[in-house]
Length: 274
Figure 1 (spheres, rainbow, N blue to C red):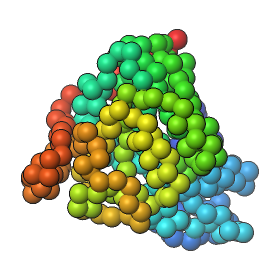
Figure 2 (cartoon, one colour):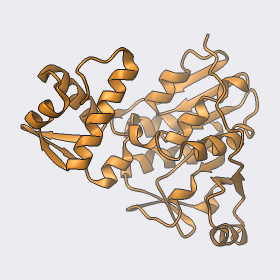
Figure 3 (tube, one colour):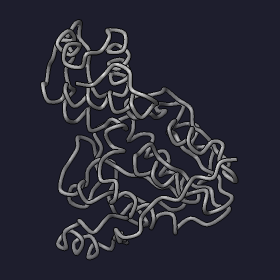
Figure 4 (cartoon, one colour):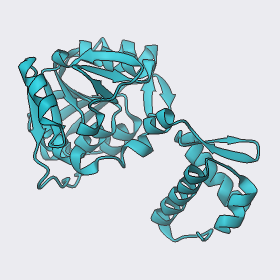
């Protein structure tokens, strides 16, 4: 049983994770049954359910709570930041080495870009362009980082700003290097399930002198609905050592500049705040 009151934000986070795990296991559950299971007050349960629904992890319908489809749940930034953590750390260690002090870089809404954002303060003076609210919040007060946050319609599932305003804002900028990710790699192409995200990512790609795709090995060999780009459209593709040799050889033969992360010594530095 999870008590109603746990000390500190870590306790609240653990409680909500327990609620999410229970709903995921059950598929569909009545709120009254959840109150009995967790011995929580109705007010606390409603707050947790509202927070999880806002993050795109569950759906509340009347007195019932259901999980979302796998595709929708996998899109949630809360879900993505907990997946392949060591792989993302290794990938972003390589990506950070491609950044020089004084650069103007762009980070997309991806979880991998969030990991990269935590390495930036160690590089020096940078201008960072992003449509991610989470990244903006994280680095907005960081020493030596000039933040340009792209506006638009806020999407809570991706914790990102999207839409025409976001896409038009990018066209007035010149970006040295774009760092981005995607949800699926099939053959020699990158795919994503959300059309609005593809438009935002494509707008960033169009204004970048150099494009770097950061994608962990779990995403290879699967597909999503919408084509984003060919892997040859990127100057560098960074992945981890979980990628099969056959896939790596095929990419190299196609002329793709492939970098594979060493998974050792990939801890994140502390983000220096002003």
